[in-house]
Image (cartoon, rainbow, N blue to C red; front, side):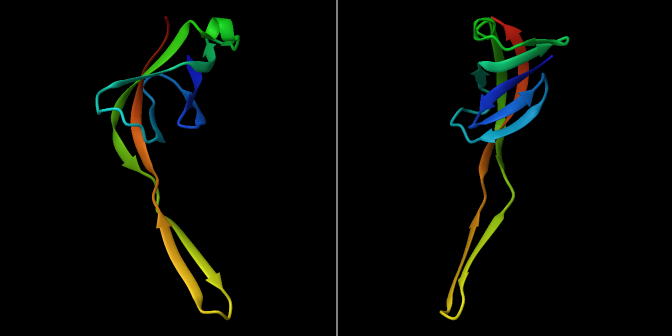
Length: 103
């Protein structure tokens, strides 16, 4: 059984015991996060009707924080002496999917 959920601006395919990196949320470590699924596949049966999906819920436990890879940004303009070097490292929250169940 797996589900498609919208977490942190992206859609993720999740099943029980998966560990995901989602955009940073303010929840405490050990707390529970709940999502409404967009699609559920159970033993080959696809459930995508909004009325049926209202009965399902995906729960996850917050494991901690994580960081993405370093992204280097270099801006340069020829013959003007303009150079600018920037960097970015996205912050994520790690969650473990604990259950996909009907309400």
